[in-house]
Length: 101
Image (cartoon, rainbow, N blue to C red; front, side, top):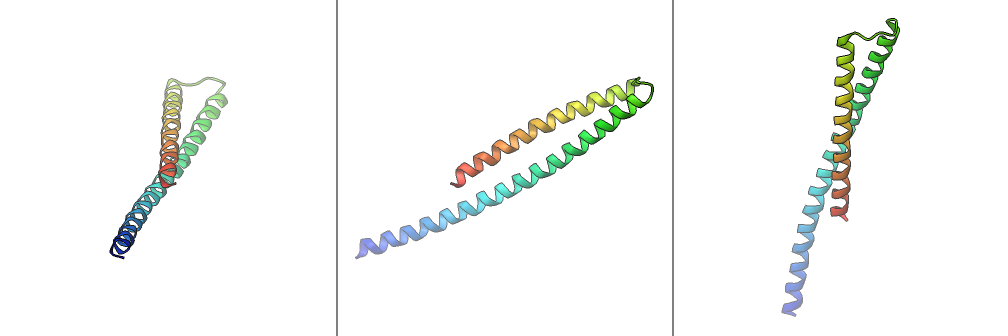
């Protein structure tokens, strides 16, 4: 009987610990998903900005000024960085999902 009571207490403690861990992982996942959504939104805005820059350059007799070329390179570089960051965040989400299971 004593062993059964001890086992039940250990089970309750384990449940509490697992619930705390699950809650922490859910909060971490929510934070990462929010960050990913913000990065996707920012990336979309950057792509739109780059598209406008390209359209503007094409409109001006098909010639790009040096400043526009530089800006396009900056935007393309930032787009690549955001894509890389997004992949990292997606990997973090997958890892958290695996841990939560």
